[in-house]
Image (cartoon, rainbow, N blue to C red; front, side):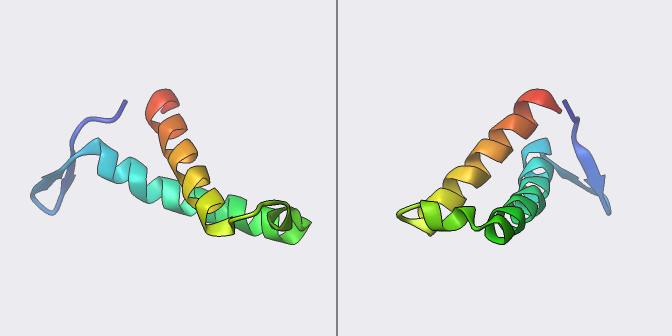
Length: 64
């Protein structure tokens, strides 16, 4: 697990770093699912994307 990150003299919580990284990982997954056509399988795409982001964030917190 990360410790506090020093960002120009301001200490930032590790969850903030994880949240930013999770956004980029979610965007990559979203792009891959869009290219494969898998996003059309879901009833509410925005709800799926938020759930995907939360899952990615949880996995990052648990395993990084």
